[in-house]
Amino acid sequence: MEKTPKFGIRVKLLITGACGFVGSSLIKAWSESGSRHQIIGLDNFIRPGSESNREALKNLGVKLFHGDIRLASDFETLPEVDWVIDAAANPSVLAGVDGKTSSRQLIEHNLMGTLNLLEFCKAKQAGFILPSTSRVYSITALSNLPVKEKDLAFQLETNVSLPIGTSAKGIDESFSTAPPLSLYGASKFSSEVLALEYSQSFGFPVWINRCGVMAGAGQFGHAEQGIFSYWIHSWREKRALRYIGFGGQGFQVRDCLHPRDLAALLDRQINSSKQKGPRIFNVSGGLPNSLSLAQLSQWCRNRFGKHEVSSENRTRPFDIPWLVLDSTLAQKTWNWKPRLGIEEILNEIAGFAEKNPHWMSLSATN
Image (cartoon, rainbow, N blue to C red; front, side):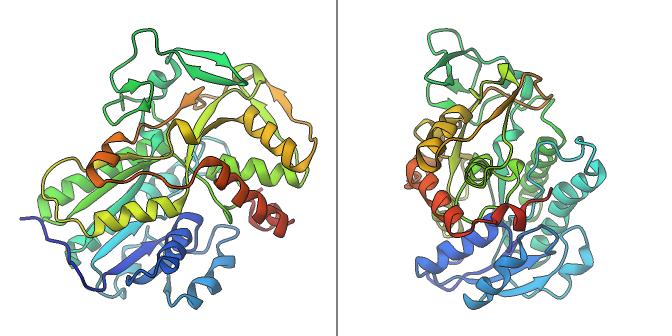
C-alpha cells in the first residue's frame, strides 16, 4: 500500500542541490508564497555560484547540510522528512562526452545519486519527486521531426504525418524514448524507471516531472544549465556567442519554464492523495514560451544594443532543431499551467544581469 501524504500540516522537505538555481528558486518561491513547508537543504557546493545562495537560504530559515548525493554515508545524519525533491543533477547534455567531464561521474551523480535518495526515501517512507528533463526523448526521433523555417525559427510542420506523441502543441509523454538520448538523458531516464520501481516495491509516492529549459534570474552562467539566461548574460557582457549547427542561423527552438511555476505544481503533488493514474508529466511553457536563438538575439538587441554572433555550421551529436513540450497531461491532472510568460521571464533575467554585471565571471564554469 502506497504511503498517504500528509494534509493540512507543516510538511518537511529535503531538497538536494538546494544552493543550485532550481533548488534555491523553489525554496524562495515557497517562502514568498507563505508556504508552511519546513525545508532542509543538501548541497556539495562544487558549482560556481552556489555559494552565493547559501546566506540567502539561511536567512529564509533553511537548515543546510554539506553533503554529496553520491555518498550514501552523507544521508546518515539527515533528519526525518516527508518528501525528497532531487534538484542535484548534472544538467548538461554534453556531460561525460565533451572531453572536459567524466562519464563515470555523470552516471554516479545522476543515477547512483538517485539510488541513494531512493534508499533514503525507503528508510524514511518519504515521498520522492524527480525533476527530470525533456532530454529523455529520443534524439533520432526529435532530429527527424519535419520542420520549416519561418520568422527566424524552425516550426513544426503539422500538415504531414507526425510521429506518435507529436502534435501542434509539441511533444507529449508518449513520444519515443528509444536511444540514443545522450548519457545525460539516459541517466535521467534510468532514474525515472528506478524511482517508479522503488515506489511500486516499497510503497512510497513518486512523481516525475520532465521539465523544459529552466530559466530565471540568478541562473548560473553556463549554456548547458540554461540557454536563455546564458544568452542574455553573455549578450549584455559582450561575450562571444555562436550559433552552432543547422546552418549556423540560430533557428533551433526550445521552450522554457520558471522554477516558480514548477513550485506551484510540486505543491499540488506533495498534497495529493492520488493513488492511481500517471506518474510522469511534461512540465514546461510550451509553444507560448518557446523561442529560437535568433529570436532571442533579436530580443537582446532591442534591450542591450548590437552584438555580433558568430556561426558554426557543424551540428553536434546531441543537438536538435526543435523541442517544445506539450504539458496537457499535467494541466488536466493537476489543474496546473505556467503563469509566467516568456517576456516576463526574459525581463527578469535581463534585470538581474543589469544589476549583476559580472555574473558570468562569478558563476561560469569556464
